[in-house]
Amino acid sequence: MGKTWFTSDLHFGHTNILRYTQRPFDDVDAMNAALVARWNAVVAPDDTVWVLGDVAMGRVADTLQHVRALNGHKRLVAGNHDRCWAGWGAKARPWIDLYQQAGFETQTSGAIELKVGAHAVMACHFPYTGDSHAEERFERWRPIDEGRFLLHGHVHTQWRQRDHMVNVGVDAWGMRPVSEAELSALLDAGRRALEPLPY
Image (cartoon, rainbow, N blue to C red):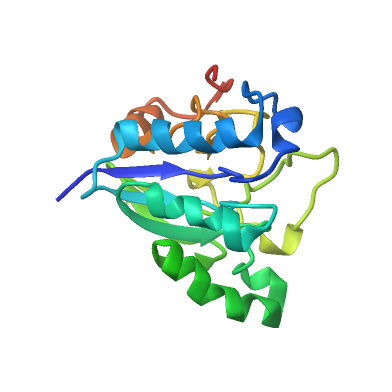
């Protein structure tokens, strides 16, 4: 049995993300290639990766195909930019099969419970509070804060850890997935504030 990893907010095919988050690439093709290379440098074929949303943008039917090149057993907790996200209502149904064909063995929306080391945590695309924009969005899709650690994405470069919320997005972890072992050690250290790692 392989290792477990977490990530989010890859935004394959999203040209504007280069400017929004200052990702250090000349163009979106270079970014896409780097995301695949950095993922496969740490994730083995028998590992499991939880992707907490926002996989691909642009022409999603095309950009989603980058998932096929990624190692591991991939499980998706969909975010607001995923076409299979339940927040899209009936529009999401036709996309579920396309995300599965691209390589996601399971997919869900909303918050789920997981075990990370000795910690029972919540995992969701959205944090309890905070956003990548100036205003709070998607409030009805956010998990209820009952004091548990939350693994999430959505906020890009806003933080790596804020109190009991841990951003697993690529923009906080040097454009790569973060291992369960790394997260377990971070959770063991308790609530604190951590800035994103450099690209």
